[in-house]
Image 1 (cartoon, one colour):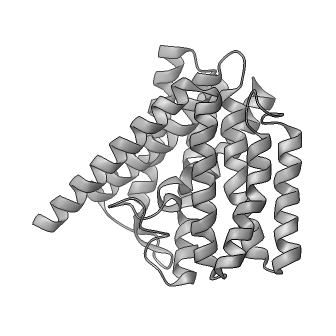
Image 2: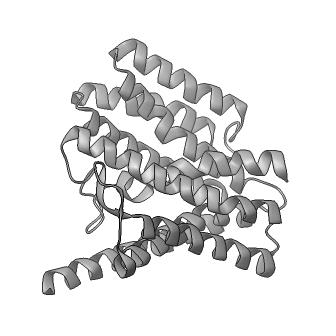
Length: 258
């Protein structure tokens, strides 16, 4: 019992620190935000490579390839988050696949790079960049929170016992519900477009699918966590798997619906 409370306290402290760092970077925007998300992408690429069981040389190659599109995304210094950066993410993935002959490692380039492109594109929106990016990031936080507490309080049938035995359908519904409530608060409090609020429950479900996908990767690799960078949480992939899945679709939705 004491160990469980200690683990929960550690998780809470780390989560608050991460949210604080993300909030500061989001508020600053520009190069500050780019620096944080680009660094996170390189660390995620390293964890993905470890899960893929590749050599250190191949891991470094994938990280170096990813730095090219990440550098191009730098707002104000380079082309910024646009179609050129999108093409370079695809090119970097193709390069890694051609050199290493390992498709899973190449997929990690896209998995790490596309969310960065999406978040930067949202933040650079000239009218509501801060609001849109906050919505995309915070709906995942709300979903994680709702899923955690609903799952613990209600329990019940398992969502995907072969992939992640601790996740329940109650947690899934709780996460979607809290994310939807959060979006409504943004509508009435900050003017979030209604179409984005209506799409939020779908994105919350997608966040949990992203979580299950990362759990599947870990199960295939035979590990509990993607890394040990974050005490109580594991690696960055463990903490950002939902956002990785949500960010590209959120950016696409903003592009076509607002």
